[in-house]
Image 1 (cartoon, rainbow, N blue to C red):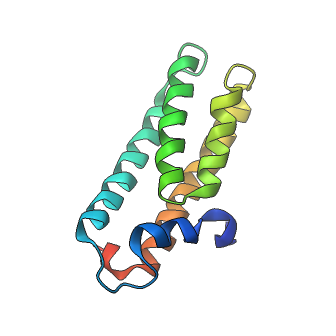
Image 2 (cartoon, rainbow, N blue to C red):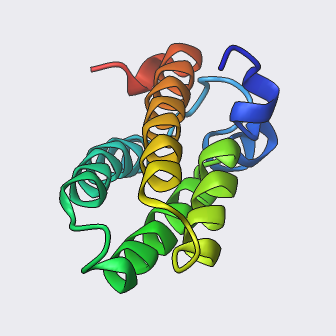
Length: 123
């Protein structure tokens, strides 16, 4: 997970936050914090769901989290969640669970890297 170029789309984040901390938009910082909190909650929902009984919901939740992750430049997370979304009907429970664990780790790693780069996001 140390390959931040594959983990995060810094160009996307640069469009959101700018290249430097100059004139950092506090509203965007708050929106990022909400995204991280919401993402953590969504991973909790995905992990707590009954895999066999709630595949439709798992696909929809994966889709929502994929979209918000993509918007904030969490490219690896978005890509992997797209695979869950697109293949939910054919995934085994083990493959789903393994992917979800990896995706959540990538999400947390990406959030930490972004917070390290932008001092205004550290709380």
